[in-house]
Length: 168
Image (cartoon, rainbow, N blue to C red; front, side):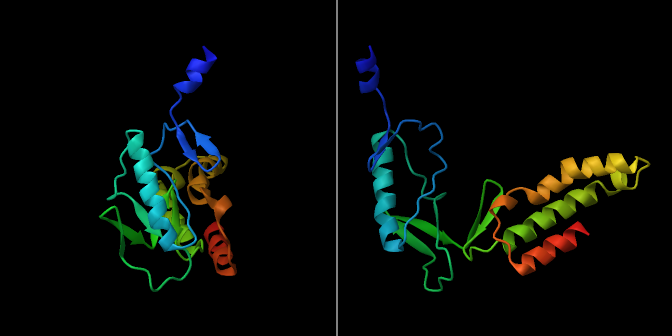
C-alpha cells in the first residue's frame, strides 16, 4: 500500500529537492543573478508546470531587477510572450522596490495609516470615549497598519526620522 501511494505522488523536482505540496503554485518567486539566466529558468518552470497541467499567465508575470539598473529593458521575451520588467510591486501587502530601500514602503504605509486615522477622526478620536479606550483602539487597529511588514524594513537615518515624526 505504501509503495503504491509513493508511486502516485505528483510533484516537482528541482535539483535534489522534490516538492509535492503544489496547492498554491499561483504565487512563486524565482531569483537569478543575471537576466540572461532568468529567461531559461522561467522557460523551464513553464514547461514543468505544463507537464503537471498548470499554465503560466505571462501577463501577470513580472520581472524585477534589484539595485540601480538603468540599462534594463521594459519587457523581456519568454516563450514568445512579453514579460514586464517592473521597478516595484506589492507582495503580501508590502511594497518591494528595486532600489532595495524601504523608503517607498514606509511612505506607502504612512499614507494608508493616515487615511485610516482620518476616517476615524470624528467617530473615535473626537468622541467622548475615554483616552484609555482610544489608545487601545490605536494600538490594536491603527499601529499594526503602519508596522505591517516592518520586520523586513532596511531602515536608514531618513527612514528613522520619518517613523519618529509619525509617532509624535
